[in-house]
Image (cartoon, rainbow, N blue to C red):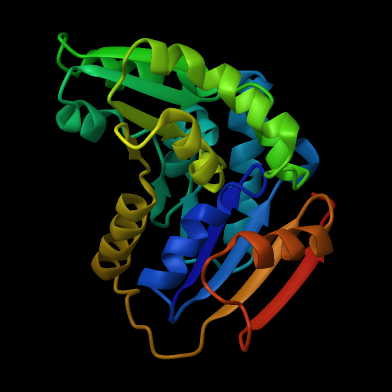
Length: 265
């Protein structure tokens, strides 16, 4: 069995971890949340790149055979640098704008992501490769990540903020919406209520984990003989992270080996 590191600025990467536990259950997982510094989306590109590399080095030093950078912002700003330095498979996440463009019937696609992701060279380079007849309505989800990190998913403040962010996308008559941050799938039910049933929501968690599975296979790490174990590591509070994991993960955590730890790194 492989040791797989899943890194995010906070709890958003739990959406990727949840899918990994479903598709690739018999591995050891280390989830590293840099919650003391969340959100990344409002920080400088150089800070994000340096901090993300530091977090991934920590995971390698603690035995990870592969890493999922489960943060759109960190992927956009740091994935090339991380892959250049680390000698293990590194899988990133990016907004699913390509599949969204293919699925859209009217050529209007909404993208809800962090400011850093929307402004990144990686995102805009990808955007430039897509058909010009497709119009992308880009919306920064300012304020959403802190509310999720604080466990305020069901709060009136969250609903009000979401309504504000989604209004322009709905008014532009987008028929497809890309969730461009791994935190946002936890808001999917609220988003669906606000945008209605006719708009397709694109979330790339499944595609990311399938790519992880392919990389494990190619590197001889796919053997799943063993019992899944999960270490939850946070630069803020490990108990808080575990409580959030137990709340947000759809995969039951009972009867599994789970440890949590607060880090100063």
